[in-house]
Length: 132
Length: 254
Image 1: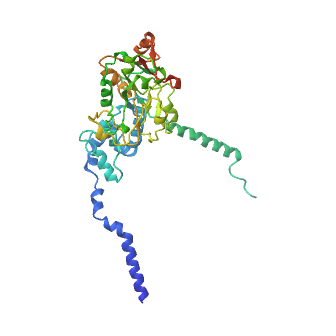
Image 2: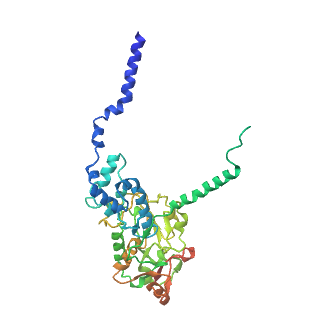
Image 3: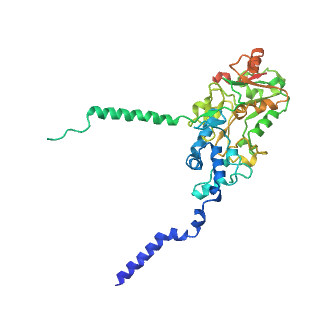
């Protein structure tokens, strides 16, 4: 009989310990699962995609890091300042222009639970722009 | 009776060959995305500079001020952590192999603007383990700060001391931030870039534009009509430390 009690106690302790991280974060995680309002703004998102020279916001989400790396190579290695997209559009390469909307970079990175972009340790942040 | 293998040796080899060939188109994905030069971009086969030090007024630092302002070069308080792209140097330091005890006293007192020589045979490029420093087809020795790991091999290799290391965050020490050009981050090396970012949009180097005495000339070394070639053809010129074989592309009229 005594043994049964011990087992039950152990089980309760195990469940408590195991679910501890989930229980502790129950209230907090809710706020972050709300997508930032800007993601609902279709027009602004399309503008952002156009500035990077990708089709739409989905491609932006998937490829922006690669395109930014391509931009860096085109500017630094080839000394060119215009990005030619796959469908032949010509986009001026400018991080300042791309990140001109306030808080877009950080809000989205925050929502996705990834590090804030570290571009602004060197590149000068646009006024009222992406945020530290 | 046992059935023979359903795939013959010949078919297997064919399939393997086809699969191997498939790797080649996959490799073409590594080709860089297309870029286009800015419509006003200045282009040359081999950029070079001539500095007529005879025209340099004593104590003048206008070229340095202009360059450092445009490129967000910090004024570090500790001289050991100094960061500089172009700076004045005495004759004996600038041209140590062209001195003797009886050289012109006035000349020795003058200050010579020195900078990265954008050598044709750059030792910094040879030692860089990450190809962060590289030589462009137009002769500019460029740096890719994204790739620099701060090993400082290039600083050891450069015989002109043209490279500076960021020991600390330079941002607080930049008097006036120029938003059009990035700053650097602690742990990377930096140097003069022959105003690559200005050439790319059709402007001449900042030091040359700022010089009130028009002592700095800039142009294509491969073009006989360029101001650089004309100055070289009509003056006796010096390069710094030629015996080291780096073939500098900054020439001095002394």
